[in-house]
Image 1 (cartoon, rainbow, N blue to C red):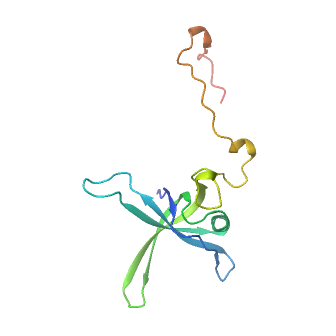
Image 2: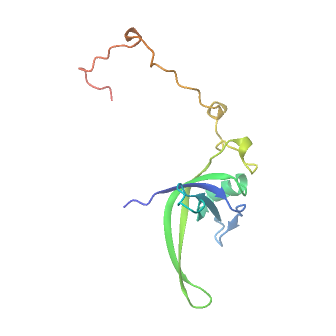
Image 3: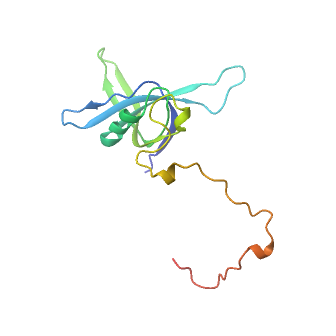
Length: 153
């Protein structure tokens, strides 16, 4: 079976850290994701997804993410059913977060978290360089590879 989901959107509110009776950290927050298409005669629609994070992911979200900040989440989709106060049966769809990522640069965010991943070394924070182009190279710029030998891996 495969249950993998990846979404990117803006936080609707600041995540708030809670603890279970067994002292496990958890948080629930909602992100707003614009749809990729616009129907003729209407504006762009937005979907709102409920996210649940546990343990260190919950602590990370509450420490570094704020309302309005762009966040990328990957995890799995989970459903659960319950009965509300009126006795009506309800079904909830939630994304259980495996990983949370900053999805915008530090200067463009609405929150204080920034655009780098927690603990990334300084070299990893540098902007990617433009790859060298070989489109105008001459044949002598390329080496011949002997593919008759066994692969080294």
